[in-house]
Image: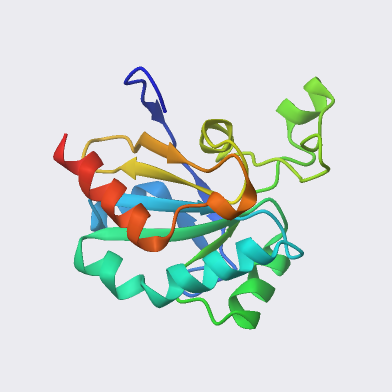
Length: 175
């Protein structure tokens, strides 16, 4: 993100991963100081699969810093559940597809130019990254979760590693 702008990002989405059937930003805000949202591209993206697994492997490091991790797919809850099982993910995997939403129907765009489906609840995070996969960091210490950092890359391979995301969350919480 640039120019110090911060957006409020609230969500309540179906969860295909461990935990409750639905995950809400308000619930995470009650437990954690920050949330790292890992925007995943799709099942065919090797980098998304590798990042999803790497973030799962680093889950305890995030928890020790009072930072939650959630993955988000622009797909169905069934596909999110498949990701959780297939890659043995230890964090919630949220289904957030803009397909069929009122905003998308009005604009007439259901996918990125490369055909990747768009996000709905995480659209502000998606706009802040150059390409997917990417991350958004929500500061959840105040009444509303604020998007304080986004990061992607000019290419797919530049998606932040779990260490980079944790460092960015620490930096965001210090300001």
